[in-house]
Length: 277
Length: 315
Image 1 (cartoon, one colour):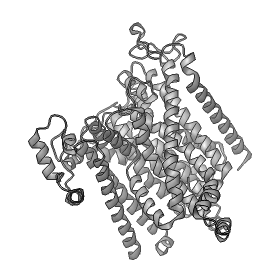
Image 2 (cartoon, each protein chain N blue to C red; image 1 turned 90 degrees about the vertical axis):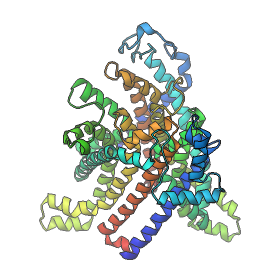
Image 3 (cartoon, each protein chain N blue to C red; image 1 turned 120 degrees about the horizontal axis):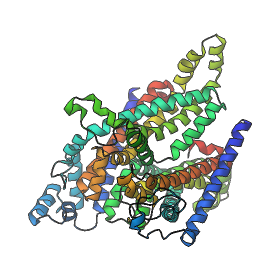
Image 4 (cartoon, rainbow over the protein chains, first blue to last red; image 1 turned 135 degrees about the horizontal axis):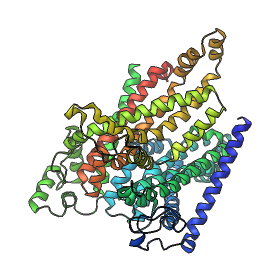
């Protein structure tokens, strides 16, 4: 890697960490410092362009876009975290067991491959329809079900290579039980691939949540969310494009930062992961 | 080669069977009596009874499962609650838009992604390479529906160069100019995937360009263009083919939202409509069709590898 590229990488990583840190601060504290009540309707101020009074303009109800975008950060991060956790809880045990026990692995991976034959958004939409009504928990389950199989796959491939290590063989020769080997020798070493994959899961899942909200089948429209705001702004896209521009910029920045962070973590923790994750 | 094809084909059949099974299980998860949920609140008891009989819902679950399979292989995916029409027929009517959109997006993916990756690999670490890297990263992070909306604001709203929404069948009207309506959506959809293809094309070209036979080809005095296009690109093609085939799933996913943004009458907007209307047979039908297509495309990709790299056949 040339010097220029290293600097570029460094700068990119710094940028990503800076953005993510700000977003975390925003998502925790935004309800206390936003300039306007994000739900306050002011019909006289409707569809106002960005100005000193309203940094990001107002929507068709006169609600302040800046305040809504900031508050939407919280929803985005809660959902992203919960979906990543969902993928971890289901993905890691299934992946480890599948990677360690050949027969079980064959069955699990067949099912995982079959689930992955359904494009992400189609599976998420179908699950939302099956569960019946929009809501945070249903979104977490629907999008989590889409990303858990991908986690299984990563953990499975890593376990396959880990179990061939001499120290696993040594542990087995010493009479260690399968449970002990799985937890003390394999699961511990899965940390790197799992962290990297979780970062990407977060990035893709917030994009997918935004898509579901944009289509009107995610969380209820009264909760300010980036995707939901873009959906509401569609009718006014030519007259008031700012309703859509700003939530989109925040979404793209978050996804970009998580992708940069994931790339950097992968290169730092284990460059071999490039082929797996 | 024949044994390779047969092995892959067997794998494909297993995948299709699993996909059908998964959709069956998913539909069992709908809470309540499936027939009345499937038919909606306005269904008469006779309709519910009729549906139960057609789908064998009054029979034991294994019999239902068998019946479901049999119907699937006969091409009977049930009837839409909302359209009162066989699901396969509706999908067929909507397929044109989605297929054209997909093809045009794929042209964007391949036409932008591969040249960008090759150029970046030929001049690694140059400003061209670095800007392409940044653009590729941005491309991978921008949601396609947002990009679509922004393109709509710019090219349809401000510059009035292209239509902002809608699409009328080219096949029915014979008017090829209608494809103009698909340019913006295809670009929005393709750009994101082009970024991915560019990254892969770059790294696999970089690997190949380091190989000894490339040095030999250059030493023979071959022109740069011949070395890059004939010797290097052909050998870098396998990873690139993989990524291009992966884009199918991502294009389908993207199309669901993009068709919605641009009000295109395709399969993607059909599934969203069906979800909002709780039209379960249609949702199920689309899931089946798309997943089976995906499995078939994977199969074709595997065969393409074997064609591109004879070593694979003997593994």
